[in-house]
Image 1 (cartoon, rainbow, N blue to C red):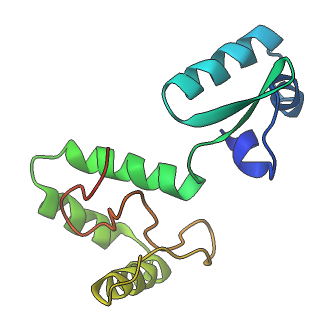
Image 2 (cartoon, rainbow, N blue to C red):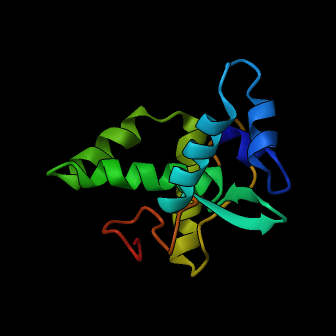
Length: 138
């Protein structure tokens, strides 16, 4: 997924494999993984001649937000889990959360594309926004 998120354009299996130079992976292994990711909905693919070109189905931030919501679904006490999470974030991350929640309360999306260190707002899918419930998650 990292390779696909870094690329501005959809990539073939060969291109993805070529970027994974730190691993000695067979072409068929990369092809199988990308096919499975496509079937699970993590990547989208389109025909390019005889080959497929792959691109992420969602941004890295949307994917991570979905992981966070899935983890939150595992707790019996969402309020306690959210409180514990809020206590563990840095001041800058807490500021980003406050800004995103404020934007949501004002009718915005709460999605920020700026920030540092990968802690940009509360981007998510289908209006999840991090304000209880699961929003429109599928």
